[in-house]
Image (cartoon, rainbow, N blue to C red; front, side, top):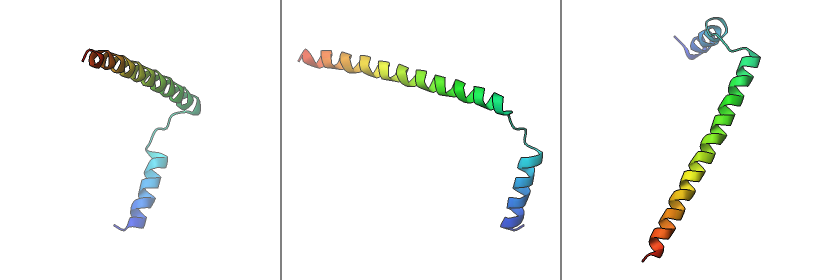
Length: 62
């Protein structure tokens, strides 16, 4: 099986056997992922700041 045959069969499978999301459903999913990504980034930032402040206070003791 050559590379050209492989690519043709792969494209055919993508067009006939794969179930794709509808555009509105894909947009909703994208918004949900974006919102949770921002929330997770904020949570990581806040945890980092708490650890940073805690370590600064700890090292001021010495």
